[in-house]
Image (spheres, rainbow, N blue to C red):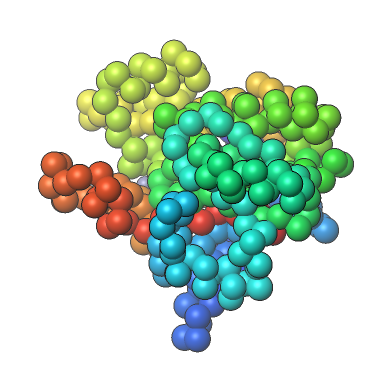
Length: 277
Ligand SMILES: [Zn+2]
């Protein structure tokens, strides 16, 4: 199933931003259409660990994040980011009125779609799966955050592209960015069973009595089942937990006491921002 999608290295992609010492702070990679990089299309972008935490909460200023977008020449007012809640909630934000409402409501959800080329849909990730979407005819972009709990949100997002923006599945390009892969993502029996039942047997492999979960295979199955063509799908090779240049919840919080409050814990790993521009 996954053999025919394009595999690429996010870290070996084009640097998007470097600091004064030449350290790469962000990379950009293209959408793929018919097995080839799609020219003239927006780029899939990802900040790296070296850029610092891109954590986003409505009630919490983050200077690092603001400066990061500024360094890229992105007007922070054009960044459209929900506060993430591991849901299957998808927002469509296409004009200034909708953006004003989105902000006034301090919207919480996990995906943003837009046909407005001035907007920069953005989510944050650190082991969860960033999925970049682009409808090449209708020119709709979408940024999806899919953790294990939210797996299935990609189906909601693609359905919205088809039903709301009237895109055809065959024009839709999807890039699955770096996330925790089945080399590192051990889960308990209950979660393994949940994924096998809902998303296919192939999502879980067993190694030395541990259940290893592939969020990549779950999302690929969802994309292919709703008609996105394999020639239009690309998958980043990197596992966040294995790759020190990337932020990883699992790697960076390994060894912390189990009873540490989640709010405290969540400040101790580097969330990267995934966005389209
Ligand atoms: Zn790994």
